[in-house]
Every structure is written in C-alpha cells, then in structure tokens.
Length: 158
Image 1 (tube, helix red, strand yellow):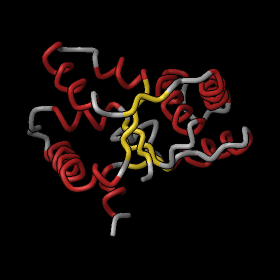
Image 2 (cartoon, one colour; image 1 turned 30 degrees about the vertical axis):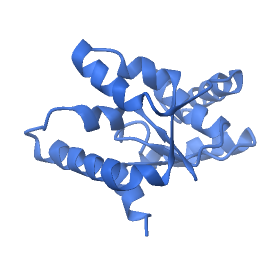
Image 3 (cartoon, rainbow, N blue to C red; image 1 turned 90 degrees about the vertical axis):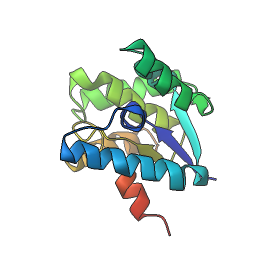
C-alpha cells in the first residue's frame, strides 16, 4: 500500500464548516469525496509539523483536526529532512516565509513517500515551483513526492 503524506490544509478543508465561497466549497466537497472513497487505498502519514499546525487556532476546531489525524502514522522529521528543507529555501524553490512548507516536502522526500496531498497551491502544489523542488531533491539523491490536490489524486485512481 502506497503512503500519502497528508499536509495540514487537507485536514483543514475536511473539518471546516461549509464555505460560502463557491471555489472553497468545491474543494471541500472534493476533499470529503476523497476521504470517503479513497483514503483506505493508502497508508496515511503525517509529520510532527502537521500535528503542530493542526493543533493551532480555535481549540474546538483544532481538536476536530487532531481527531482525524490520530490514526495516521506519524513519521520522523530527521536531520536530513531539516537539511533538505534548508536547501529548498536556499535554492528559491520556496520563499523563506514558507519554511514549514519546505519541511513538509523534505519530510516526504527523505522518507520516500510518493505523494504529498495538499490544498496549498501557493507554495506546494504549484507547477511553477516544481522544477526547482525536483532539482534540489535529485541533487541530494532523492525523489520529490508528487505534490497534488485531492482532485488530482482522484483522477489517478482507476
């Protein structure tokens, strides 16, 4: 069973109140559909960073997010992951303000997790950043995860 790294925005969309914004509401629906129909096809993994981010904010909402994350495998954030995150930032793959996002990529890459599932299209699921992310990972002897939205992972399913 392949592993999917669940980034914080995914679980946030899964637990958030229905949005009145039509685009966000559509993303929430896709997230719920993926969760119901496809989560059992994968081993779901998170890092301590995801748990920290999910536990922030409104305490009731944070509890809902953490409850969803509780059964997932918590993977280690290694020294190698911190080093790769730094390389991603230095190479301009992500801006300095997105250090946490660089660490999500680095954890998934160093643990050889094939997919990183996110709704963060500014810094993660962004085609303009993909080539630099991949180049930095390759230079370190690693393969970058496929960074995708639930909608994209739905399309790859039979």
